[in-house]
Length: 489
Image (cartoon, rainbow, N blue to C red; front, side, top):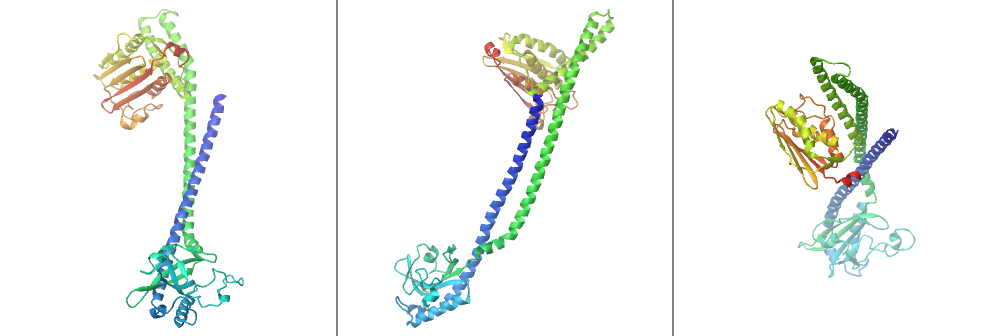
C-alpha cells in the first residue's frame, strides 16, 4: 500500500516537474521575444534617426549657402524691423520654413566670447506679431513663445553637437529633443565668408511627432515574422518536451514492470528451489533408500545445478533490495583470514582449471572486523569470479587486502579483456554488460549488486581498466567498532 502511494506521489511529482518545464520554456520564449523586440525597436529607431539626420544635414547645408554674409554682418544686438538686413534674413528663414512644413524653427546664431553661450542673429519668428507667436492660443504670449531677437543669448552647454561641431561642418544633433509642444531633431551648418571663415551657423528644428509611429510601422513586419518564428519554435519545443516526457514515462513503466517481474520470479522460485535442494540432500544421504555410485554422481550434478539456481535467485532478490534501498546490513565480528580463505577455496579451482596464476597478498593475521558476511562474500566472490572468467587461459589474477585503524582496502586485479572506454561509465548499471564480453555467459547483475553491497556498508567501489590490458577493482570499507555496529552505523 505504501509503495502504491509512493508511486502515485512520484507520478504527481513528475507531472508537476513537467508542467514546470513547460512554463519555463514559455517564460524563456517570452523573455526572448521581449529581448528581440527591444533590440529591434532600438535598432529601427537608430536606423530611422540616422536617415533623418542625413536628410536634415543635406537640407541645412544647402540652405546655409543661400545666405548673404554681408546681411548677417549688418545685423547687431537691439536691431528691429528698421534694419533691412534683418528683414531680408528673417524673410529667407521664413521662406525656408514654409518650403518644409516639418521645420518648426529656423535661426542663425554667432559665437560670443563665452564658448558655452551663443547669440541669436535672427529667427524665422523674430518679426511676427504677438498673436502669431501665441502657439497654445491662450491669448497670452509667455516666455517660451517669445521669438529671440538679435543679440539674445542662448546657452549651448547642454547641446554638445551645437557647441563643438556646428561651426566646423554640417551636423545633426545626436538626440531627439522633446518640449511641451513636440518632439524635434535639430541640424546645423556653418555659414562661411568669402575667406572660408565660419561667421555664423544656420540651425533648424524639425518636428517629428510621428517618429515613434514610423518606427513601429517599420518594425511591425519584422515583429510579425519574429513572433511567428518564436511561436513555431515554442510549439516545437513543447512537442519535444511532451514526447520526451511520454518516452520517459514509458521507460519508467517498463523498468517498474521489469523490477516487479524480477521480484515475483525470485520470490516464486525461492520456495520450490529450496524444496528441491532439500529433497536432493535426502536422496544423496540415503534417507529414502540406498543409491548406487552412478546415481549419487547424477544427484551431485543436479545439486550443483540447483545450487546455481539458488545463487541466481539470491542475486535477483539482492537486485530488488538494492533498487528499493532495502539492502539489510547485519554486522558481526568477521575473522578476515578465515573469510578470505573460504573465498579462495571457491576461486582457486576455477583459476586452476584455466591455468591462471592466482596471486594473494593478505596479512598473515588480521583483526576481526564488524562486517556483514553475506554482503562481503557477495562482493569479493563476485569480483574474483569475474576476474577469472574474463581472463584468458594462462593469465594472472591477484587479490590484495590491506587494513588499518580506519579502513579496509581490497584490490582485485586481472590481465583479462578489460573494459572499453565507452562502456566504463555504465558498468555498475543493472543488466549492463561490456560490449566486448557479450559471448561470455553472464547476467549483468553482479557489479550492480556488488556496488549496492559495498555502499550499504558505507564503502566505495571503483575500477581502472584498459581494453585488452585488464581491470583493477578497488573496494574501500570503513572499519566500524562493535559499539557503532550496535547503533546501526
